[in-house]
Length: 443
Image (cartoon, rainbow, N blue to C red; front, side, top):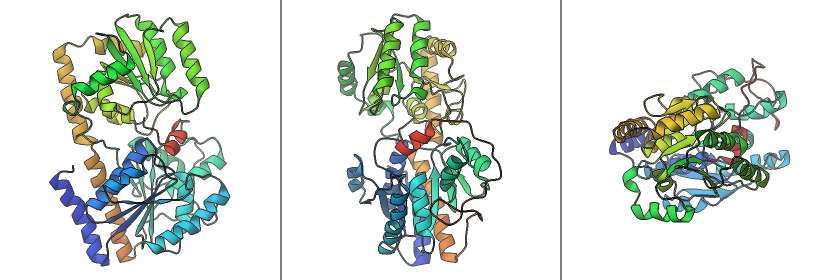
């Protein structure tokens, strides 16, 4: 649960705006689907906090397995095909969202992905609702058309970036003024991700399900099975490590990409690692999984917008090794709470794993204490919610006073209207997060 101090902070900001407008604030978040992943988790968390402080929370999505979670907080879910990139569907979504704004007297529309951002932005024009976005990733910019499509995520009167890395991407590629951006790191629930929250029975259950060897040192890489997650780099590092007492678990679904799964299997066999590397399709109890790990690895070969794996692993007191780029640079304190290594470097990864396994019990305890304190101070669900609700309060107060917080724009969007002026053709580094933000798989 949120601390009393943060509850009061949320309540004051929202209630102040509520009294000024003489109505209960209504916030509508729009996300493609409510499946597994960091963006979806944040959306659900924010809806719950809004309800807790006396606002109304609405989530618009194309549905998904996590819709039922909203019933716990009382937030409303409305099903629309906002996941679609089909221009005709996007156009139809404009009138549907505009109707929802009128029917529910929505004050703020918060889009969390590019396709629904185009529809929501147009729907808000001419309505009483204020528009904001969250950029969950530094999307690939392969050409001007792609860059133009991505620009919808930069149209909010306020734009939340999930890391400083993403904030810099927004300023460099879409000409956003830094005053428009609010950097709010993702946060996790410490009552869930804490060593004391995991029972021995839960750990034994996973150990048996995964058939883990007794007494082995477990190296764990969570993340869906896609090439840029770095599974092949870790497999090569396992070969270089050449230790029979080390066992590697790759946790994640291939989401139908069976060719890559087969490639991983062949890499394991060709390197003689059949008995030392195992692929686990999915895990519904990640806190217990982390507790089984001696070392947690995030080996992404391309920079990610944030990276939940490093903060979850640190929160559980595990030694964490991540690649030295993107959001990981903001979540790991090099040499204090974990390791940062060059991407695509199996030698460096093998060396870091060996160093982590060589820690004495006292050194592991010191590392765990530092890492857990670091996460508790900087990356909690409460902190994320507090900062997000403060952005909502900004827009609610601006709405009451009639102030326009948006940056002036020029040009034409794919659904009509204007688009941000883009002063530079410099492309951001190509990243995998175009897919991960839309699918919102946790890093």
